[in-house]
Image (cartoon, rainbow, N blue to C red; front, side, top):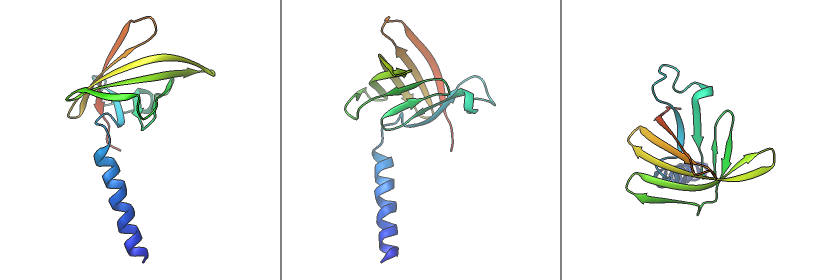
Length: 119
């Protein structure tokens, strides 16, 4: 019985990963190799949050969409000392490279090229 439950758990977790958007995972800053995936250069995209060493943004499961193949948009809320502010993430994923464009309330885009980190 345990064997069957273990197989079912593996199938469910692998299905969830296969259905995850392409941006989910850990990304490092491109161009700073070999330190691209060092802790201080990493952005982690999870199911409902985006986290770096110095920032956190949260979003609902229905706050992201695939605008076009490989282009994802997330409407998130930046969190800083119990204050929240709107952030829009435009993510352009191509293989193991992602162009991240973050636009805040002021309308100014901040662009970074990231590379996928292997866990």
